[in-house]
Length: 497
Image (cartoon, rainbow, N blue to C red; front, top):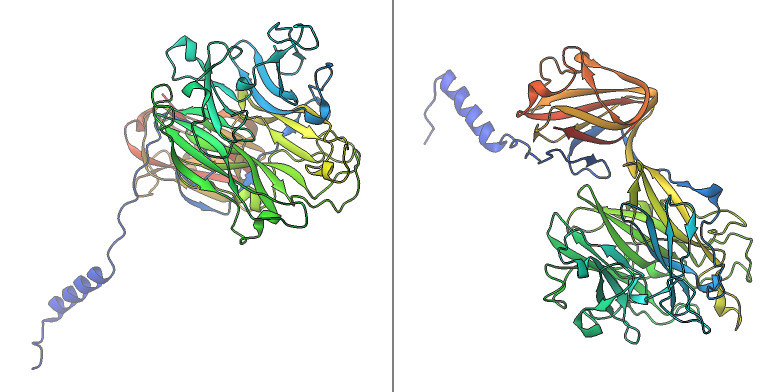
């Protein structure tokens, strides 16, 4: 039976209805909550679109002309075993805990973070004297807990059990005198033989615990007998339920196949949370056990059996972004021939933000990880402690060169009156445009209304528009920001009340 013929107008309407049903309109982009928190551009968490912009890793500057700040200069310290620890700033001073010999741990202090003293604490006897800076091993990976209300539990630490390769926890009122949780028994299963770490996640209201995970693979090339990995765990109550840890991430490098452990391994991974972003501080053991570059040599820089330090990022419990590892771009590069950090670099378990910079303390070594395997009794690593600093919020940036680029945020409710941006436009320019939630320019805040930022480099630049010095006229509205860059770098932005 032939279908009835519709009048031309009705037929057109029917065709439009069919087309609309076949190709539904995209739903409006979901709003994000920004509030007045600083927004780092290390990922695309708040970004809707970016065009002709590259994400670039920040440039860390080594302090003291690349020379160490702390060396093994006490009789009880051994440069062969002088390495990783924790550095905190408690509002008045810098404090460092570090491994300084087999089973001996040290403590140092500094007023400016550059010049360090090793105070005589009088706690432990060494060769008949208590005049030394030796401290309890349990404090080497500690943190100052901002969530804690009990002064006796002000500091918390995670450390390896002295006989079992598992993590234990302890607490302290001062970071010096420690008391075990769980009667000194492990709170996790294997493993825990590098930098275990515990910290508080204010957004998620949980403690996070970072330890190693082992993936045995048998021997390779006569030396490589371990495939290392890592895991992150969470708990809501460390004091009252000390073993109730839930694993949220557990992984090893395997993107390039099952034998990737020959190329790279997770030697240790610690966490640091800043402005809602989780940063992974990764010690990456590369070309493990491959000692074919020659005998023990404290001058030559080696490229096999070495350790590099990379920056990872994530939000919440999502998988880590490993982009910088696979791009082979360490945050702090190892030094050249003759330098104290030429063959490995291990960061401290956290980053300190002070005086508008990020301070990253690290241990450097003059020799390879497995060098002692070449000859019995051979000296090992010759380690020392160094420092590198990074521009405030300068972990990564979005960069445009000669060709202009743009980045547009997802829609959000404007809860402040002004905008601050961290940007470098010394050799270029930057504009900020305001759009409505649909992406249309707002009157008086479009690109042609923006006052350009040219020849400037600042951490808290304040954009203006021809008729407005701030964003007070838009407060409470749902908006998007659209940044226009040319020969410029954008690191972060923040809406201020």
